[in-house]
Length: 283
Image (cartoon, rainbow, N blue to C red; front, side, top):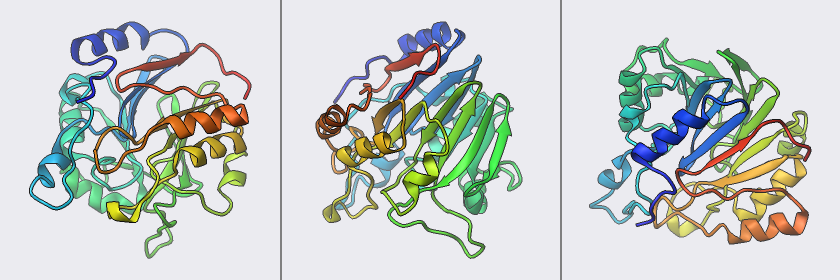
């Protein structure tokens, strides 16, 4: 099993020390999960910090064998003010992660796609009105952060009967910083033009790709993620959604190769590792 760069007490010590400093700080938690700290406020996006899927699929023909050891018990993250979920798949909306977070943080605020409100309330056992819903093009200010919904195609742009997106990415703004977390997505028509309207400092993009034999909805592969980051003018891109489950992963090497080919700045993190910047940088 892959050992995180930092975990448990060491991880918490680093977050306590760094998270209160000026600038933007983010830690990859594995899969699509990130801890983001800005202006001494911390949020989680798509945290998966349990073995719920491993247990669920243990006796099936699609076992979810974990590759990387868990970074941190979610019950220890008692300083988080916001959790955002991009869609309803368990590795992005994990009850065994978010329910302990709610217990540890009684004032925790939830950001979700508005289309998923009923499902989220049921899975997390919370009041239906508790989550803050976002949709394609709508924004929600929460503390120092602002979340704007951007459609995600997993593998299509799926909308409910009222036209609301079931799968979203978020453009997250905090002070001078703009972060784009795509959620699970492939490229779709108009995606680049839509994202270029923001000056994106950090793009967080999946690289596990798609393959029919996996029997799950796919994502950008490494070269596609590198090209998307370049085409939207992201100052830096960080890959995610790999090295969690053996059946659904990919090497970051093709991503790295394409970034270098295009002159796109990138950082490849290990689970539990941090990226920080004191001020926005040009693309």
